[in-house]
Length: 82
Image (cartoon, rainbow, N blue to C red; front, side):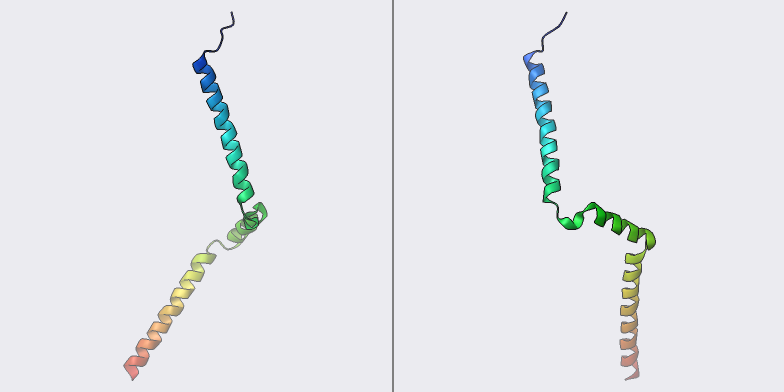
């Protein structure tokens, strides 16, 4: 025989449906608010750049540190020679 759904069952079903609708609306709104610079093509281009040179950011930071160390060494050697 077919059993009817209890009021608690209807409450659980309605809360579940509201939850699913809320998640979908929030996802839709979050995609609309994103800027154009975060488009999937930009992400793919950045991924390609990382694959071509995975240590690019680290190398740039190390080069900058090396330049600063050389400047400090020149300053200290200039002070010692004076």
